[in-house]
Length: 133
Image (cartoon, rainbow, N blue to C red; front, side, top):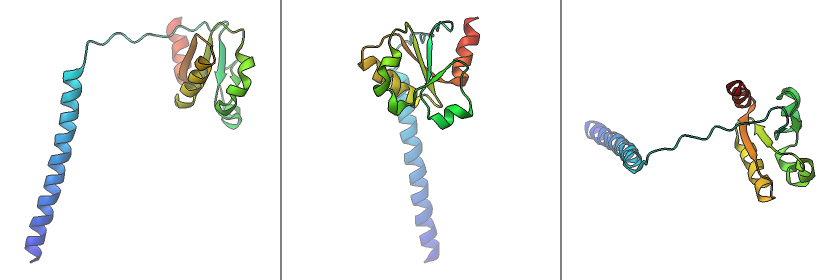
């Protein structure tokens, strides 16, 4: 009886592996066939001399380390601090992984601010600066 159980269990596991691998291959095949020629991704140009660089992480995260010259306006306070963004030709927002800065960019754009760049995080911001030299 245990021999039959082992065969049944093996068949179920084998079936699960087949279904999983088939679904993955279908996904990648679908993605491949639906791809259109990709445009080159626009590389953001930042005017590091005059851009308003904003770290939207928490004050605690900001205190641990941040991009030199950045101002800390945590994401949960961006909308209540819109006045601080006025008069800047270019606004650059960043956080730890790009999620919060993406949200901050959306908030700013919904409130009429243009030329807002999501620099993702400090490391990416530094790479952008190095690539512009």
